[in-house]
Image 1 (cartoon, rainbow, N blue to C red):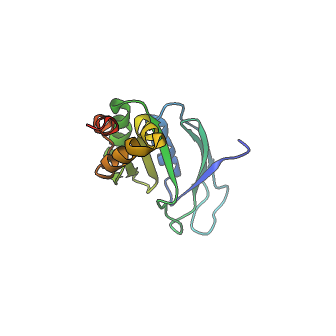
Image 2 (cartoon, rainbow, N blue to C red):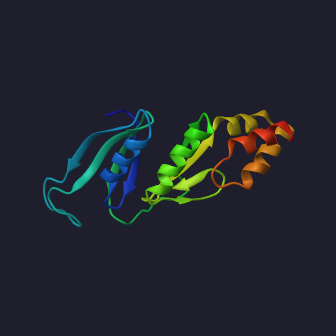
Amino acid sequence: MHKNTICLWYDTEAEAAAHFYASIFPDSHVSAVHRAPDDYPGGKAGDVLTVQFTVLGVPCLGLNGGPAFPHTEAFSFQVMTEDQDETDRYWNAIIANGGAPSACGWCKDRWGLNWQITPRTLTEALAAGGGEAARAFAAMMEMTRIDIAAIDAARAGE
């Protein structure tokens, strides 16, 4: 196990979430599933307690802790994409698996975890500052899934 790992709290479906992430993102895999050795409050012996997995090279631990702490927008994964195909592939996979779109490149997976599917051109435009950043930001504010052609046009002042 890594020295620093992101722990993500799930109600009961950490294993399903980990396998889903591993199926759509490169450099992602499930490395271990740990089960309860005995009955415990809210669960039975053999229930999945934790799942060790990696998402885009980031080590994570999924904890099946029950419904007490749902995910919020206070935590999200930001996935940098290189082109529209990659942006659409991740966005569509999350939405098609019971997720929901949000604004400005954000979407939520079926377990409530938030994702920012962010094309590199948008990040570069915002980092450029000035009018380029302002135009790209204004264009982004009108979008759900990011449209790279529209961001590039805004960057160029078109």
